[in-house]
Image 1 (tube, rainbow, N blue to C red):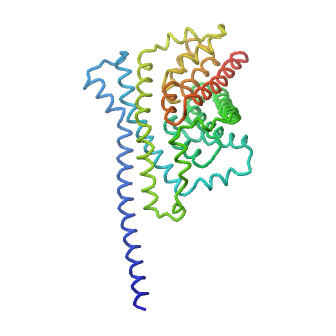
Image 2 (cartoon, rainbow, N blue to C red; image 1 turned 60 degrees about the vertical axis):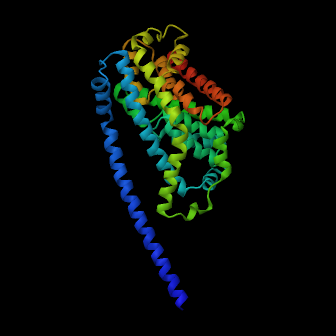
Image 3 (spheres, rainbow, N blue to C red; image 1 turned 120 degrees about the horizontal axis):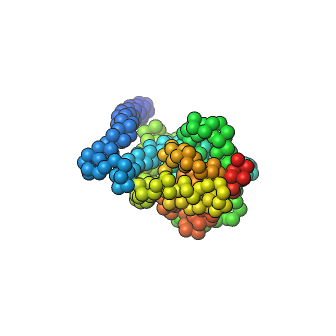
Length: 358
């Protein structure tokens, strides 16, 4: 009897301790999120002060624009990356790889490509932020082609781009961009899936998959889930942050030194080579959809063809050199080359089709 009472008291003590520990973590998490939100919304002012007041660079100059871009995007992207990885970590503590496999079990891979591309559209993040979800897909045993459909759609299409395109150019252009971007993501993922290139995923990503999911995940407490998500942040961000900074540095240099007028002169409807040239010019650049749309507007105002400009936009936000640098952390060179070739072919076809029909 005494032993039973003693055990009940011990369980009560442990339960109370866990509740206290959870409350502390929730308070810390709440304070951190508030600080994150405040810092994120002050980035523009702070980086502007550093660029133009602290460093003394002039507004509108090549170096000033490049430095402002770099100082703003590095903390912005890294902050988004930490937030996304933490959120994905929490979700993954509920949905194990086995459950994900069960959801996709029995479905044709083509259906998986459609679902993954749709999920990518609903995920308004750049490629570096989508990588944690890509790793989660691989870990869950989802086919490579399906994961790449997601990875293509996530940066290329999002609600910010669609709303801005609708506001600037009307619903037809927005609908065309949505439908063609979705088609590129689905078809590209399907084609790559047929090539059987799973062995060209980086070893450390496959090791995560082979290690499996801890058995305790299905019975984890909220406190343990928070710990699990934070560990995911340290593991994943710790591996990709240097690639993120390198990618932004390349993009900042191009952003500051490539003039809009120079590109518009090569993007007319008359020249057949304008579409491939626009894609080549877009590949070295780095921007999200919201950042590139003002450039798209300026190019169209200066006489560039719609198909050429859309191909340029897709290349910048869905197939860029900074993106490739980031992807190199999770994909081996041969798979990256195949990825670039298949997606570039889809973008070229869209550009030629739009220029022929519109």
